[in-house]
Image 1 (cartoon, rainbow, N blue to C red):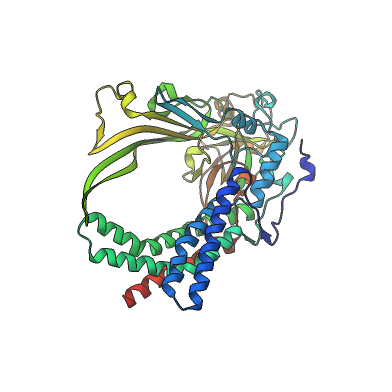
Image 2: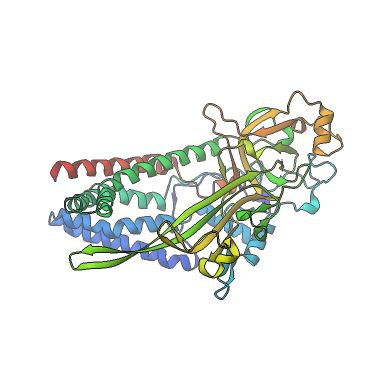
Length: 476
């Protein structure tokens, strides 16, 4: 077991060079080879002033950098995984033993659940057998949870990481690669004879600039969130005060259990004890059509996923950090991050059509053929770690204290506990954006990067793509 009294997270250092482990190292090395091959080709082209070949190097460099960014973990992620393996928290063991895929080709029914979860507990958390059923708002006998930031500290990112290296390389190619894409789009647009060709031309022309701006904006928002998480001190629930605050704790039952969640409104896909959840129902579609080419008519097959229905819900819970508990109203939080999915169900369409829909739906959907159905569930479950930036406020003034206690189904053992008389809601303030996330602060900050990588490099990348688009039009 890990001695949490000796573990303290703080500064991330100067440079974070953390390659992935296991089989992931193979595609990661492949991404590096793509980058090196493209860079060597571009450097050779520079010596001969062959700018077309410089841009062609981006065909290898850009995918290589994007793949590398996707596969590269942070130092914190690997440290947390090492602790989980040693500490073996309950949810980690459960996912390791029960995660994976089940199903049968003959029935056409499959289900998948992840074996790993970056938002799960890093250290062991008290199980239901240690929760006080008589006084759920009172302190635990074991004291504050080991994963609380006042115990293990708040992780901070390295000044620069491999992600930053990959993004910096993308910046170098932003202008030439964008110009090559725009030129190609303009050529396609000149000879376009149908809507599909015009769409492809528009994607080639405007895709790099629009995509890079969207990426820069998303990184800016994420960077602002992560900085707020690092800067705001975490309150202990027992001594919390009214107003804006940060809390970390464990989801525990309020006066009543959360109602069952019927994924896809089907009792066969029922989940219990989810205090905030969302599910999405999608269908996989296929269409084959005839297109005209220079060599005559050809058939082209297209595939896509279409979202048919989605639903979300929540149920009040007690957030408990070991020092005490407080009532949380998750429906008051617009910004929620539930992390990794809990389970995916997939059903082949043709073999199970009658069972799912009877005769209400045929095998086609707006001219497309339906191949399969998929339901995906995300949720914050009983016992999960939970991170909150929110506002603590007094319970409704029109209710007497005795009614609060009766509503919670408890005996008022500790009438003077301040948190007992408050509730936490998702109300934002100036410079303070409320949110609720599955995971402790360690889970929230596991993938954190420096503000330079969040805000500066993506901004330069977007500027390069915009300049490349302008230069292409000016010289076409």
